Length: 279
Image 1 (cartoon, rainbow, N blue to C red):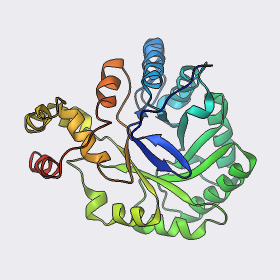
Image 2 (image 1 turned 90 degrees about the vertical axis):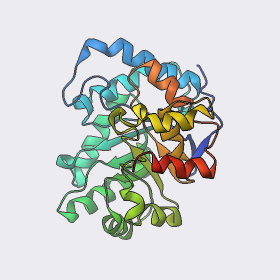
Image 3 (image 1 turned 120 degrees about the vertical axis):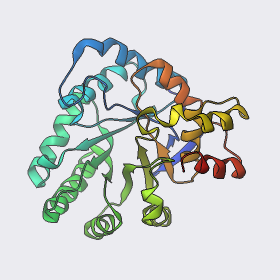
């Protein structure tokens, strides 16, 4: 079995250490429905990331209607499972005590393995459904099907409310949209609260669909570090102690560039200058 040697730029999730940059799989294997035309390329890209030393993969049952999870399962074949940290998510239509358990088991089957971190993908207006789902997931932790529980797209009040109904385990992650351009997690007090609570913020769409990668001002900052604009934008995020970023990982070129955002840090001066680049 191949070992994944995590690159030494690590963040904490629960009692585990994950690379500060992970691999996001929205678009891997299709979007909302499966697209099998690039399966080989997508599997190879994920395997390449693991070989580089990225040990964090984020997926969801919603992505390509489960096909993304299937490709993640194929990509990790031949690697030591304990070296890899897999995140998946349950769609709100499956919230509820029995349906959540069924959805988690279906995700694990598609992945061909247990799930390290299972997130509630989006909140629903009916909080009872959220509560039932969290309690079901706690039982799945006891069963060994999942290891940690988290949420996604939860605002500060909903996160607090969800924490209060946990019976046995803690919420360890809230995955939200966060980037140099979209700083709502800071402005709302969510990031600071999560830091105090020991909850990791997992930032999705960290490059704003590529717009930050094309920012000439960030590119100028990058020249001082021999880095690209995208690498500066990602580094700005992981500069914060409790933040990991999960840019999309559909090809080797992007994964290599994302990987290069780790192992160094912007100076405080350049951290502030990066903010000016998007004002």
